[in-house]
Image (cartoon, rainbow, N blue to C red):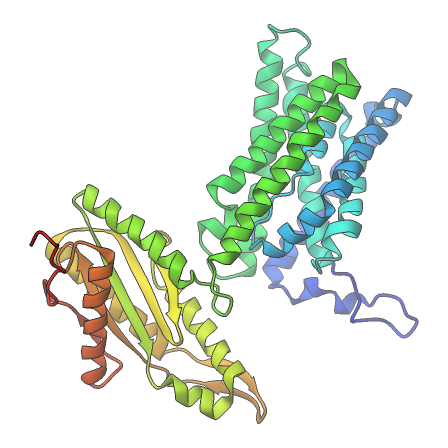
Length: 444
């Protein structure tokens, strides 16, 4: 439930009716409430068990120690984490799991849940709240971590506890299974609510990219090592802090590189980033004796939109068209904004010959129809209105049929685009083989 800064009751208390959670689809709200209730019930069940009825002084001291380490970690990395949170897309992997995972392995589940609650309360105050993350997302994330930690604890307990000797294979296997369960439970619960909130957003939006998940696994492995170290020489766990902070900075650099490669108005790749990705895809197709294709799309009469409704409305149209283009191609295809009202698509890993050329035409026609069917609600000085009747002209060319380099195929596709415009616009024109001569080398 979101921090209620915009909705209050007459007495000044938060008004539950104004929580942002209720704006989600009902099926997503149901999952959120079920997961949170399950986390609370799990903690209550453990507290009611004989093992959870009372905690030893040693266990309480260990919980306080892990919480302290997490606070120190967060304070040292606060600036980096705020930038990471702003730069992240749907998926965001929190490196504080090094401490929540260690708590899951070392402490009874109810006490580990207390550490998780304290860690996430501090993260909310120092990172998530300043980044304007909705409170209901914070609470849901906390609940998923509590459940993931419970699964991890059960795995280690089943294996007989943490490894006590160098030849304790069962203990090592228990930690490995605990890492796997923690990742799977947390990922599935987060992916579930994303899937129920939006139309199918794609696998990457649901579970994150491979390197994001590798980062999470690496962080959990450090948490497992920290738990083993705490069991023998507790103060050596301070050695975990330097590498985890370096990892923060490495991840931040990667995220900033991604921001620098993204067009701000549309969220697509910018021209330079698209050409880099497309160039790699073309070279890969050539090595594999396969095919790839380039589509250039130009919004017809887009200047009329800006003149009639203003540039802000025009930006909303560009963003809506970009979303349609991204939704109309495969996940391994690259969509970019070339500038102004011009977009470009690289269709990777196509079949060669006539089959590939037919697929290029089919994709181009699909994208043209998606744009033609688009209705874009915009806010203008004249009030709210819907912009429709958009059209796009499309030109396409293939590798290797129409050229052997990305630059050459772009020229062929651009010539095809202008053929579509000369033909009356709202048309698709796919080049025939080699309509523009290849550049001659000095030797030729």
